[in-house]
Length: 85
Image (cartoon, rainbow, N blue to C red; front, side, top):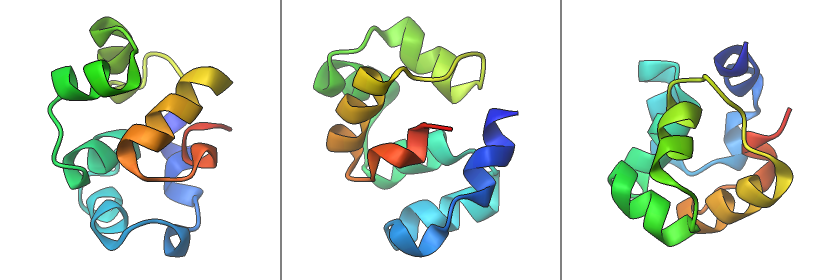
């Protein structure tokens, strides 16, 4: 499952707020977005990814493709590997 692979990510490479969010919520995508202080809509705009895709990523219904992962990483300030299996 997507959230399990995110939990296994080495958190020392992430900003503290993201690592803490993963521990608290178990959802790395949501934790990264919240740590960046962005709403789902703002993340969609910043990353130029459709809101419905952002919602799917956050609900673990879909995983980002490499170009989406790179755009998300830039928008959220985390490594793109955070979103890739």
